[in-house]
Length: 240
Image (cartoon, rainbow, N blue to C red):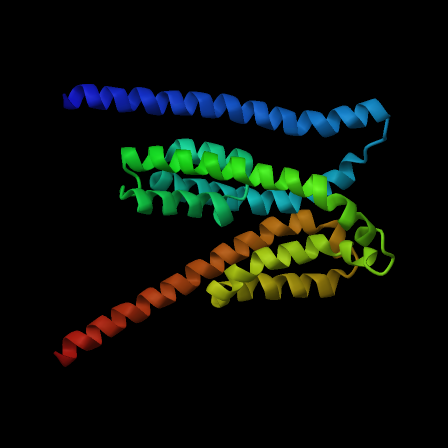
């Protein structure tokens, strides 16, 4: 009985990974083919150097965050829910909470077989509801928002949307671990002050340097905290 159940679970997980990899490949192909097809059809000249310098910093940051996110969430809500949530987006803010809430309501443990099935259903339902709401917003809210976007007093604000977005994404991490955030912030400020306008040109190449500095600083802080905890334990033993 247990052997048959184990084989059934292995077959289910194998099928989930097979479908997930195929669907992910199809979605990535569509993501790339749509802008590429529009570019080739319209005959627009593409500055690949500018594209690389603009996307590399974001790709490095989101690549590391995405890898950590997937490794931490897969044992909790299962591979199927991770595949669907990664393809539809808004994982941390909507898909992951929906999966956790669904498992709690159903009374299944996180990471269990039944819990993974419930999480997969919850993430799919969340993706459908989100897509439907966005579709309604495009149809009914676009005529109302378009005059606002064309307003000359509001238009300059949209030039700063990307920095504001990165700042909003970084703020929770800074508040959560201010000691770890000090090193990259100070290093980037010093580099920007020394390099001046050239900082924007080389930011994609400087980002890995800041990441390494952050990792090094985190390791130093970890060793310091470890030494303090050992010293405190020794003091407590002597006092007892």
